[in-house]
Image (cartoon, rainbow, N blue to C red; front, top):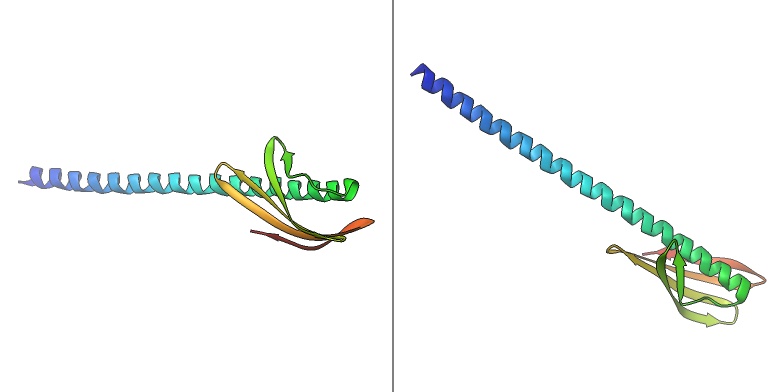
Amino acid sequence: MKGYAALITVMVVGAILIIISTTTSLSAIDVGKTSLGDNKSEQVALWLDSCVEEALWKLNSTGSIPGLIVVEGKNCDVVINSNTGSVWNFTASMNEGGYLKSSNVECIRAGSITINKWSDF
């Protein structure tokens, strides 16, 4: 009888340990995926900032903004929302690996560029 009780106790404790280790492993994998996603999202945001800065530089130097800007081999689409006199409003967007980031910028081009509004979404 004592042998059966010991065997059942070992089996129950073993099952509990397997459940705990499986849960811990799956949680660690989920945290790793979240961390990787956060890093990718931050990278796309940095590329988008570079794209907007390039668009502002082009506007200042040439008086126009191209519809496509390439940043580190990644495409950034630029849409001119309005251009009234010296006031420009444009939206730049990047979609890389399923991470979509966009920025809307309103600026004035009068000898130099003055940014009135820059919002990310």
